[in-house]
Image (cartoon, rainbow, N blue to C red; front, top):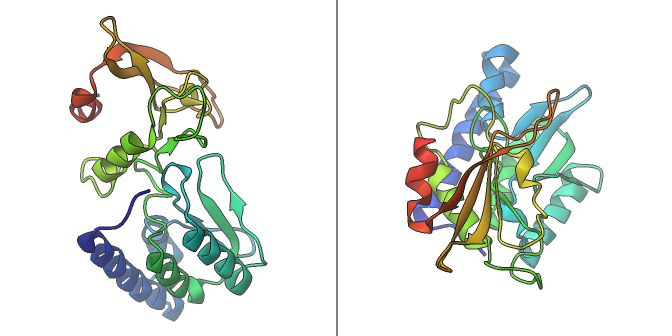
Amino acid sequence: MYRYRDDETALVLERIEEFEDQIARRLSGELSEDAFKPLRLMNGLYLQLHAYMLRVAIPYGTLDTAQLRALARIAERFDRGYGHFTTRQNLQFNWIALTEVPAILRELAEVGLHAIQTSGNCIRNVTADPFAGAAADELEDSRPWAELLRQWSTFHPEFSFLPRKFKIAVNGAREDRTALRFHDIGLQWVRGPEGAGGFEVWVGGGQGRTPRVARRLRAFLAPEDLLSYLTAR
């Protein structure tokens, strides 16, 4: 289970204060919707037909009881009593008032959650097997690797303004419960020729208007080369 470091907590709170000021400027008319749009998307906030939608990141689908209770409180207090879990292991609140977004973000921060990189053209929430750590067919717990990728990709200056959103999945079990072949990069834990563990790398998958199945780019990648290889590709 990941935990914020002190510097991460300070950064998240700083981002909330910054976004609160941007919201105030939008409400006062100082910022137009066109100017506000990229700012809100950087904080996981979408404008829908009747209300704002806030997408909360749940890294590799792992929640503890304190976080789950906080999400339930937010649903009761700020939404309509429920939220929607997504296929990418996020949670969406679909009936959010713009004035209440800073309060929601602060409640999330208190339990180690945020809405950073849940929208916009960046590397999105890294997903993993929902049964990671408990699956009978597991070869490797995918959560530490997903956490490594989360830390590597969050606020990475080269990946903050991509041409399109970018999605990564990590699977450590024999059965693929991550749909990794429908991700931009899918990482499947495998055993190499001499028995060492590493990753089979799939690239180019996606859904949406033009669904496509990923192709295998590499049969075996040593774990120590993972970040440098992904950065290069």
